[in-house]
Amino acid sequence: MLVLLAASSLVSVLALRQILISRTGERVDRALDQEVQEFRRLSELGRDPRTGRPFGDDLRAVFEVFLSRNIPAVGEEFFTFVDGQPFRSSSDRPADDDLVQQVLALAGVTTATRGDFETDRGEIRYLAVPIRAAGPSDGTFAVAVSLGEERREVNEAVRIAAGVSIVVFLIAAIIVFAAVGRVLAPVRGLTDTARSITESDLTRRIEVEGDDELARLARTFNDMLDRLEAAFASQRRFLGDAGHELRTPITIVRGHLEVMGDDPDERRETIALVTDELDRMGRMVDDLLLLERAQRPDFLRIEPIDLEDLASETLAKASAIADRRWRLRGEREGMVHGDRQRLQQALLNLAENAAKYTKESDEIQVGAEIRDGQARIWVSDNGPGIDPGEQALVFERFQRAERGSHQEGTGLGLALVKAIAEAHGGRVELVSSLGAGATFTLILPATRRGSR
Image 1: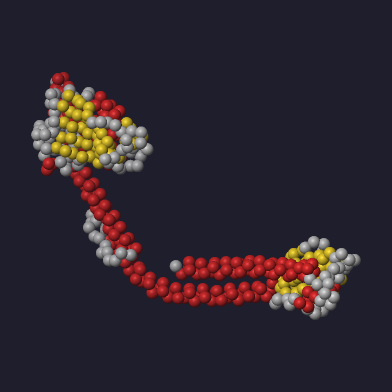
Image 2 (image 1 turned 135 degrees about the vertical axis):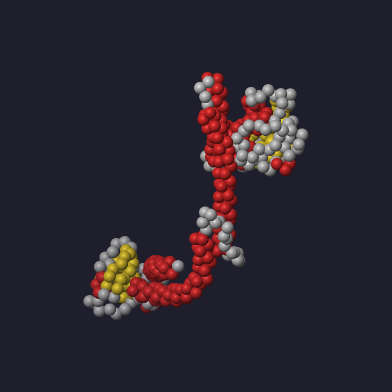
């Protein structure tokens, strides 16, 4: 902080000096122009005080009146020339003076000339204009201003500004050193807490007091620890559940292979059973990979989807899952932006789940509608229903609700449905009761057809 403050102070002082020098040059140029304009006004509109008549072609009279009436400012001098020869100036300088020698070169200018030159007294800025008279004589009027005087004023202002900056810097240094201890104390506490946290112990939190930046940082850090603790707990639970679920098919496969005999019929039965278990394991692995991909930003390929087309295609594909009375319901008027394949995958999972818990004579409905600015796409069955106490668990991994007879499955289907809905910025809603069937609804942001 002190280095930055010192650097900014230095840059400010240097910038101030450059700005003042630039403005000094502009002010000097305006002063030169003003003197020339006053001289031209006198020569064109003024009158000779001796005769009371206009000056006419009497250049000497114009020069004498102007020099007698106009007092040059500090560091400013006037020079006049008639027919290329020095006439008079606003000060009595010796002929060998360095400034006079430089000005003599301006005696014969034919156009207005502006510039700078160096003398033993410093840098001089000048403006020389030719004077054309009606008579036989021509003249030159020149104004010279010493920039040294102006620069000395600038340097004095810069010295004052630099002194003020140094005082401010010293005061700031005292404040910074006094405050840094109090500022770093909670930071050190944050560091100590972070060092004490390990993978096996994520329970420690930082004590938060106040509402300043450090307090908000500590709260954010605590929130991050909460998320990490939940993630590690979920990971441990997932590994335990996956290990338990995979252990059973592996045990089945190994047991049947170990006792498999040489009888061809027995071998065919064993191979069919082993293949089925391996297929189930493969589906489980695919579902786990899909759940992992659902957390990635490239999981979805978004496009506008017509609800009528989505519901009709889902019903057509679902009718091949099982022999049920499949029905299309809802207004199905509107659009939803999402991934068509992922949404159909979720709906077909729901349709397959409904088919597992229904009979051939049962009806399964696939519907869609727009309600309150949201697209509602559902699959409904009239199966045994789900106990309200178990409804919160059916969307968890490897969890199955008790709906009548035991059904085979990986226990990941509804978890996939939930992941796909949340990836679209929506959710899954379940309405069910024992003996009254179940309705699973995807609720997604949507628009009416034709709206923007």
